Structure formats: structure tokens, C-alpha cells
Length: 429
Image (cartoon, rainbow, N blue to C red; front, side):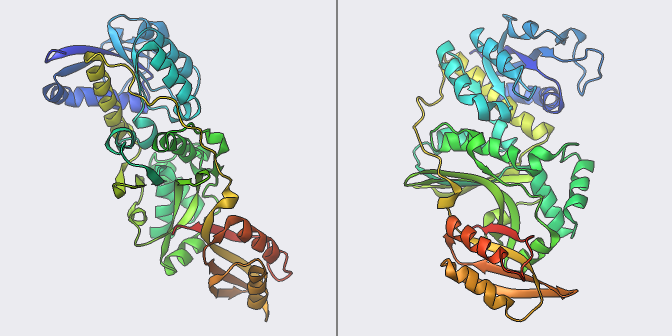
């Protein structure tokens, strides 16, 4: 491609991220052209309402309500999908590929659930799909896994990959807020949606984990098969006790390759304060990676927001243009390996448990016996406080299998002195 050649872009959607892309091109367009020799121009933008005011003043003829005006415009070489959701995004991306256009998307739901079929279609059409922003927002995660670390056998990935939940847990930890108060603050600041269920229930992190694990372990991952647990049950008491024990609580997305397959899960966990992930606060995200050659590495930054995500989208556009200029076909890996997803019951972990119990003699001994009968060794067992005849008992186990621990918990909760509302969290080693 000759220096300074203009490349026309079509965009599907002009919401938060789409507005961020438009602002980025307006603000740093000349910088990009100087660094890359590529001038990016928004040729057509699909919107729902032509009369709505936009973040950036583009010529009125740029906007259209017709998908065909973007997909079938022969001047457009790259289509950027920023609509979100499954349909019509899936159909429009497929049509764009068939029109011999490369595609850039930030759509984590779509790539987690239908990424493999779309990548296969791209390969058949001789085109590419770029999706860096779908998993890490503004943090480069997919590119390092696909290129920089390609010689490594990845042993595990551990991520804080949802900014909403990390902000909530940070405020609960630093400002002594309860869950609902911290959630309301996150919504006021725009870190949480009006309906935050996908974030706080862990589904958003699970979609991102499915994408990242598929690349890290070269396999196809169905997000519906992942173990998912959100943060609704994390209380101020648990935050306080975790810190007293030398931990902080984070929502983690974890992928590990075991001898029999992959263990993939999303759940809150106690993270040692000395671990790099413990210092990831507020809306920031991070991915901790362990490879057989590189050892340990961590990628850190803002995982969401208009401009951070737009940064990743524009980087993908530049990659698409450069690959197209070199006449390259799809760079995506070939046929994925068949890897079994292991059940959570095979997990070995330490566990934190907070019980409410009647403040009577013999309660400690009964709990210790219930756990000992199932071969669960207790690292710590302490009574934290008493109120109205009820004591809080916090215990931390040594490493034990998930299956054995759950059997011990069933026994403990059948004790007449133990209330059923126990809090249980895994402990990151």
C-alpha cells in the first residue's frame, strides 16, 4: 500500500464505542497517518435514528439506516461492527465477509458463542475477522496470545476481566460500602449498566474467558459449559475477614490446562495481597498468564470505556488494512484441538468459609469433626464475633478437592447449631 493512501471504513453502530472510534479518528487521524501511512475515513455509518445528535459531527450523508449501504458499498474495504448482541450483527458480519470485506468487531457475546463459525466463514471467503476489543477492551490480550506468545504452551490464564465487578469490590474494600451501595455508585459513574446482571452474575467475564481460553489453548469453548458464579454473595464482613487473613476478594476468570482437559471457571476468590492481581483496583482489568517458556506475565489497563476500546478497534483496522495490502488471507489458526472441559469437582483448592452458629460449647469441635470425617484439613478456625447468641466462625481449609470439600460442607450444614446461610469462596494459591 502506498504511503498516505486513503482507506474507507464502514461502521455498524454509533453508540458509546462507535462514538469513541469517531472521536479517535478526529483527534488522532493525522498521527495515525504519519505513523502508518494509512488515512482512515469513515465512509458510511449505520444508525437507528438519523436525527439523533452524535459525539462527532460527521457529514450528514455519512449516516444511513440501511445496512446494505455499508455492506455493499464497493469503496469500503473494512466493516467495523459495534452494534453488540447476536442478531443482526451475526448476519451482517457474514454478509460483509461474503462481500470480500474484512471485519473488525468488539462483540464479545457474538465471538464467544459464534466466533468459530464466523472465523471459518472468513477463511472460506479469503478475508479476516479481528476482535481484539472483544475480550480486553483497550488492553492488548488477543494479539499477544496469538502472536507474541505463540511458541509457549500456556499453562493457565487468570483474569480480572470485568471492570464493573472490580469497581464494586474495590469500593466495598476501600470505602466500606455494602454491595448495593457500591453498585449504585458504579451506575452513577457509568461503570455499570441500568441492568447490571450480566456483569455481577459473571456472564460477561465468562464470554471473555471463552474467547481467551479458545486462543490460549487452541480449542473451541462453549461459554454455556463454564462454571459461573457472580459476586452477589460477597459481603462487607467477607471483605474485612479476607483482608485480616492477608487476602482481597476479586471476581476471577480462570483457565487451566490439566492432564485430562481444561478447567474453566468464573467465580469470586480470595487473592493473596502479594499477588499482582490483588493490586488491580476500580474499573481496571488484568490478565495473568503462565507459559512454559515465558514464565509469568501480566497485562493490565482499562478494560472498558469508549476511548480505550476504540484504541483496540482502530489498531485492528490498521492490521486489517496492512494484511489486505500484503494480500494475506486469514491468519487465524486452523482446526482447533478437541479438548474436554473438566467438571469443577476435579478442582483442588483452599476454601474460605464463614458460618453463623449458635454460641454454644462444642460448636468448634463439631465443625472440625464434620470436616475431618471427609478428610478436609483446617488451616485456621476462629470465632470472630458474637451478637444475640449468634457467633460468626471463619475457617480456611488446606488444599482439598472440590468434591471432598462439598461433602464436608453438607455435613457441617446439617449440624443443628449451624445456620444454613454460609459464605464460601475459593482461595487462589
